[in-house]
Image (cartoon, rainbow, N blue to C red; front, top):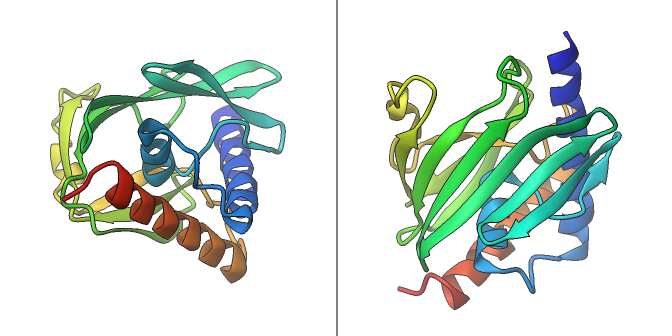
Length: 193
């Protein structure tokens, strides 16, 4: 039960932070890795909500931790391979926590849009669709047997913001606007056609 509470806290923190970030239009002045972190996971450095903080612990590779009073809950990483290809790494602090884990390569050279689709209460996360992206499983606990989950342009079920059940349409709209701005900036300034 404690794991669900931690997921709910991470989710609440991400939702609040994404709403505030979306309203401020703060997708500018991000490194490419930070933009990928936001497009993939929906979090930024210094996001705070419900007793959980997102803290950047490294620039290269970009590493962020979800921290609470009891310590680190999860570590997320983004490693740049080239301007359009990034490896994301997900490591829950406790193997018993029902959070995603593993390494996935994101080829964003064909990325057209990141669409926030829905919240999945049983997972405590949101689902996004990365239209035009190609995802390749590199490593998961089951040796990528679930690789079909990461099909080209398919749903990505590890998006932390905004994911609070029942959050407002306004919050979701603001988050989508922030995703749109991040994709536009990324395509115009980083992964150019």
